[in-house]
Image 1 (cartoon, helix red, strand yellow):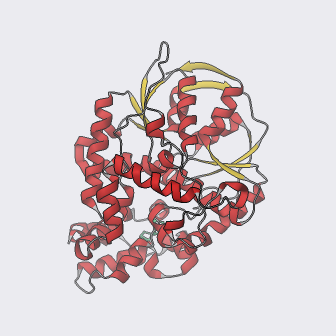
Image 2 (cartoon, protein in one colour):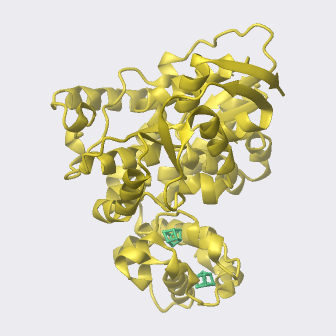
Image 3 (tube, helix red, strand yellow):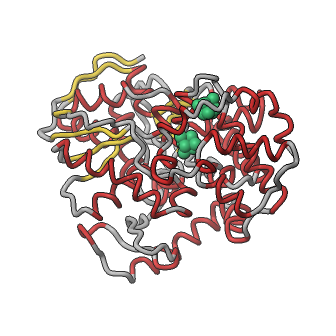
Amino acid sequence: MLIHKLQDEINKCAKCGKCRSICPVFIETGNESMVARGRISLAEALRNGEIFHTELLRDYLLSCKKCLRCSSICPSGVDYDRIIQTMLDDSANHLGIWLIPRLIFRLFLTRRWLFNLLLKTARIFQSLVPLKRHGTMRHLPFMLMGGRWIPPLAKKPVLKNHRNTKKIKDSKMKVGFYVGCLINYVYTDIADAVIEVLNHLGVEVVVPPGQLCCGIPARSLGDVKTARRLAEINVEVFEKANVDFIVNACATCGRTLKRDYPHILGNRALKFTDKIYDISEFIEKYFSYETKRLDTKITYHDPCHLYWGQNISKQPRDILKRSSTFREMETPERCCGGGGVFNLLHYDLSTKIGEYKANAINKSGADIVATGCPGCRLQIEDLLAAKSSPAKCTHTIQVLRDAMLQHSLVKKCL
Ligand code: SF4
Ligand code: SF4
């Protein structure tokens, strides 16, 4: 078992229980097997041969949102993320990967044309279901996720729609855009905004069509083989694109590319990861510009994988403060309850965790809540729709695009 290699990391845990005070899942469930301390005790028991991998244990592992909040508070500096990932990998080795996700990962995620076909078919089925709530949300029928409301799939994925690079006169740099699945197939409006803002700032944007899923869903279920294959293809595709930087607008994809790829591919990934930037981080680091403020009250939700995972919180706020009337909500860094695999498997729990967020947004009095992750946007739109809230959710870069195209002055670039 791989967990034997983490003996020192496991031993670091002082069992102080501080992680219990902030873990969104533990706060809702009060279950010790659903918090970092409890899972580390389970890792110890596995290491000592006192317990074995079972479906029940896998349930406890998959009830972790991997939000990284506990690592930020842990006084012993335990690398919990590494421990939980290793336990998930061991679990997949012992129990195998469930059939449907295994088929999706191995057949569809690694073959773009087949994935496109799958989602095109899903879109046809989805279009047969009438629009509900706010006129924007539809239930995706074959997902069989009772009560879950999601937005329509896009007519044309970003990777088909943005094949041709817009030539920018006297462009100062060439930037590759890593799109990610949710933006590619659902929130194409975020991609449009990324490209429009960068073009407006004098940047040539390339969207390599060969890029694939970052691999996080496969990694979350311990499918190391698929996660490695996807990482290899993405690194290769962007190496060939020969770009100066690579931007993304998804907190989870961004963290995976920056932090997981070196673990998966070793030093081979370093040249690639050095170029990765979240879009707000990139704009605030390399550009100076002025925009007219939109006449809109906007608040901001910190995605866990930006705030805890990449230490990015000031940059999006600076953008929003320049572009709108900004209002901070209560504890904006508190988790919204979203998150790929966790959300699919624990929808009720995810909604309970999100209750605080939905109330905080409504209390802020903002018309719009901006965020830096399409996964958070999906969750927040669902939470707001359930409360019939008039507030809308968008991405930070869309706010900047709207403000910038009204009136902006680019003062300096690089
Ligand atoms: S906060 Fe850190 S040291 Fe304390 S119980 Fe949790 S993981 Fe262990
Ligand atoms: S990563 Fe998040 S959900 Fe998982 S144990 Fe830590 S705080 Fe809880």
